[in-house]
Length: 178
Image (cartoon, rainbow, N blue to C red; front, side, top):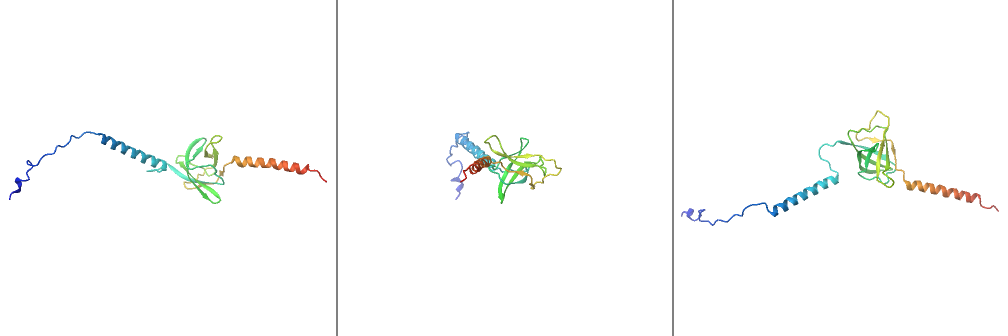
């Protein structure tokens, strides 16, 4: 039996193919893909991930007190930002911070890292004061010269304590003797 008679393309009914055009579904899909891309970009940026080669290097600094210093705080020389704090760890009994600095800036081994406050109640940042040495801290090295936070609460507490201590001594000295 010859089946070519029964399966010929001319005998099959043809379905109408709808005309293709840019539709609402296309724009919704495009917008959704753009939204996912933007969310991924923000997630990578907020996580602080870097791709490719970096123009930064890391050094360490150890402080007795870093009260109020936060991850991502600015590192500055003469008021110019040169890097940021990339990690804060406790290396008992001191706090060890990692400074991520621009490769164009070299830190001398007698430079002083101190923690300062921007404004009266502003954020903390690391200020580097330049020294006069000819030797530099190598990437991965540790800054030796550091100054910890001057905590205003401690200063006020010492002043109040010293003033109240003076009054106690005056009262003891002026007490009537029997």
